[in-house]
Image (cartoon, rainbow, N blue to C red; front, side):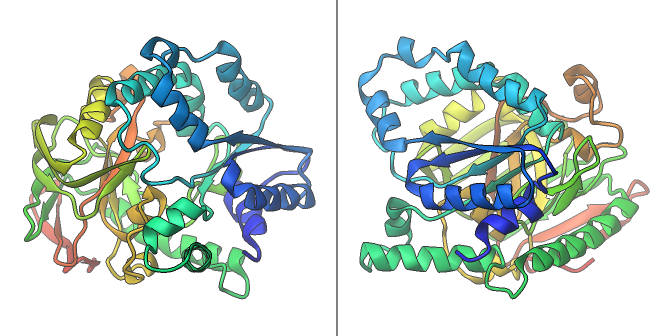
Length: 404
């Protein structure tokens, strides 16, 4: 993919002269990881290291290792991330999975390992959510994912079609992808500024598939999206592609039912046709036609994992939505649909939030958790109404698109 590495290095993490760059990549995406590595050095990086992961060996481990073994995260693994963070590194993650890789795995094994990893890497994830460094999540094709998306063609054709789709979503098909990303970020910032000026107290969601839901927003909440500053002032884009505008909901105020508009692919397993019901911020019931045990593992991770941590707005006329493809990858699917996330909120979504303790954030209505899982609820007929502090109502979305 032409300009792939350059876009991520310059428009994503915005590598600074002499900076250390850490790339996390599946082994199936080695050619793309090396492209990023080369671009990082060309941008002046002091050094660049690739950390490889392999889903197939992870599957073998889940099949044969005990829960006791899977609960162990060696200290050197967690310390390595913090070593790089303390030394000013930026972090790039290539999110590219086989959507079916963990189908049939004992859910208890996945839950055990996930809980152990969440606890072990808590300090590192705090660095990320507090924007103490620049970071970027991107994606690249792999054969299993391509064949899942395009099952009726050869593996080679499927890979080509997936690569072309990714190029389009990342604007790599433009003459100057970095400039195209910058322009999209500017438009997102303009829309976020309008929402920030209004400071809605409550959002109300309704559509024909069953979503009927309200949630408050904390005082002095901040809508953001596209590019944002790290704590050191460096501007970066955390997700490429990105079409969303998001903020933190008040985790204590969610009421009603949310119905999924798209499947959720989480840790190599699919959840389809699910509903979540909340009362006074607490998840009181959930159903799923398939993959309910995946939801159970998510919501039971810690006390904050069953409460909301993000509300995000994405038009149905967004470029990714217009492609009419199910990517089985949250990085893309969340940018085709309005969505929420359970679990941790981003502290940057409230005035003065960066640097606050978990206790201080919770007091302001900003959720804290070791989990953060997005799920899509946006449909072509979604209506979102904003309710101002004085009770006035303004439409934000009509028929799945912004009207504000």
